Image 1 (tube, rainbow, N blue to C red):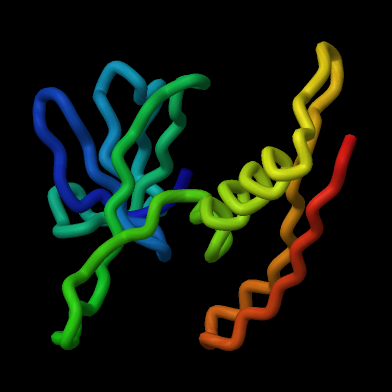
Image 2: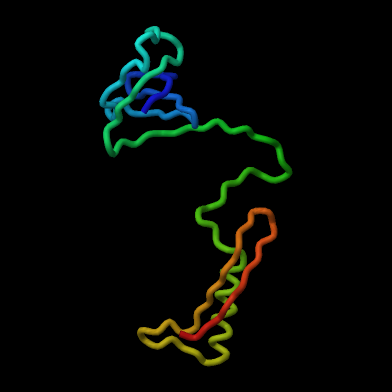
Length: 133
């Protein structure tokens, strides 16, 4: 990896790349060299080349601009379920019970499938289908 050395301690080194900053454990660094022959030693954020042990773990930090909004900052779980999945599954179960559909060994019984477009702009469309398997 090539980047700029922004911090180093006895246990870790931190290297800035275009996307953010990698912080690596010293034990995972196989080799650390100056990135250009004319780089001054001890210069702030000097260019470096870093060789990392396969299987190493590292922390990656990115700078983000935070803006005030009227709702709290939240991060959705991944993957987020399609809107209405739980309700649709409950309705399918109720429908199957009214028809006395019980799953047999090796058969799924009543199932539901739902396809939804996720535009991110608030205009999500979807279609649902109940079926007997």
